[in-house]
Image (cartoon, rainbow, N blue to C red; front, side):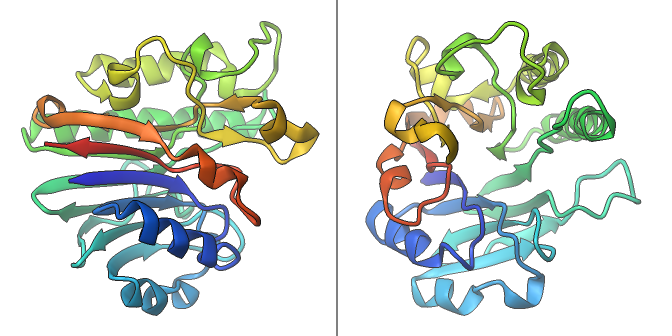
Length: 256
C-alpha cells in the first residue's frame, strides 16, 4: 500500500497537476490539504474518472482536507478534530482505507507570532496530541499524514535562523511535535532517511525552488502497529518544478 500526503494549495486551480501526478505515481491513498473549496465544488467527479473515490471537508477560500482512495471510497470516521466544538476550520478528516485508519490534517501555520494565530496553532496541536493518544489506545494501524507546519529539526530546513519569529520554527512548535512522537509515533521519512536533508515545501518567493531553499513540513506518522510494515518513503520533489505547481511536493510511504 502506497500512502501519500500532498498540500495541493487549491485543488480547483491545480487539478491538472494533481491528476497528472496521480496517473504517474499511482498512490493507493492520498491525503490532500489546502483544497480551498467549499464542499459543493470539490472535484469528486474528475477524481472518480481518474479512479479515486474521495471524502472531504472544506470551506470557501481557505483550508480544506480530503482523503482519496484508488479503486474505492474511504469510509469516513471523523470530519473534525475533537476538543473544540466551536472550531469550524476545515483542518482534519479521518477515514478507514484498506484496513488502515488514515488521519489527514492541516495544522495551523501560526503566523504572525506572537499573537492569536500562534495561540490557536498551539491549542490545535494540543488537541491533536490528545486525539492521537486516543488513537494509539485503540491498538489499530493508524497513519497521521499531512502538513504539520513544523520544522522539526535542523535537517528539515535549508538554513537555520536562531532568532527567527517564524511560527513554524519556534521552540514551542518543535516541542509539541516532539511530544506527539514521544507517544510512540514513527516519523516515516526520518526513520528511513535519518541524516538526509529532505524538503517538501519551497516558497514561491525569492526563487526558493531554484535555490533549493526548502523545508520539510509534510509528515506521515505511523502507529506502532503500522511502523513494522514501513518499506519505503520519499518525496516526489520534481512535482514542485512543474508549471502551475503547488508550493509543496507530495511525500509518500510504501507499506509491506
